Image (cartoon, rainbow, N blue to C red):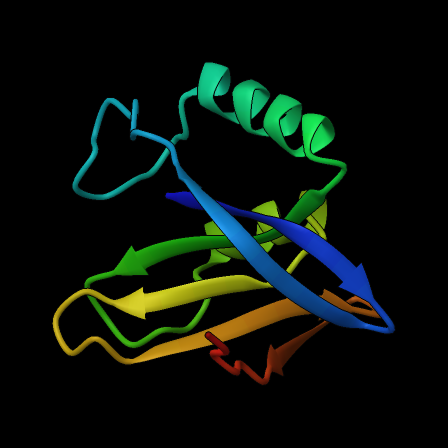
Length: 110
């Protein structure tokens, strides 16, 4: 999993830096549990830079749609979740808004 750090302005989430967190799940092929120390380090890094968490990025071996576990996590981490199909490379972003799952437009700017 990757955690994006950046800023949120007028409903636009920008990612300026991405921090990778390793999977510590007991069944890493079917579940993902981010290393808590990495999450803490990412929070600290964002704070030091005057930024905030702006996205979570992870992959599925299937179409890029949130699983039931993702939706549980999205209720806790209220930022866009970018999900990448690990086979095709297709990606989509999702967020919980007003308790509904919504797809989010993604634009890459260099």
